[in-house]
Length: 72
Image (cartoon, rainbow, N blue to C red):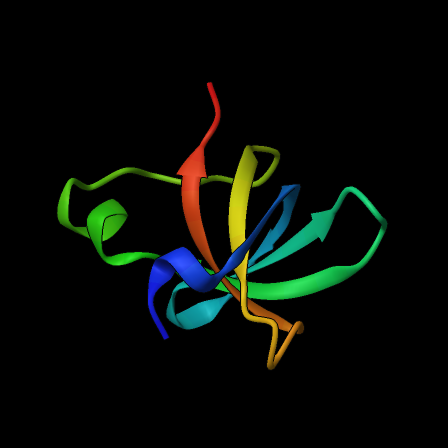
């Protein structure tokens, strides 16, 4: 599945777990597990607890996602 097929939703990072897994609380009060997308890893963009992020969520498995963008 390409990144263009993902539904993009905004949320806030609640917890940073082991292995690069983050818990993100979406605007509709749903918690999902998310990891950083490849470009964020490549350019060493740091995500900490409390950051607002945009998450790409798959329509097939809405409990997992990719953090696509960190808002300033």
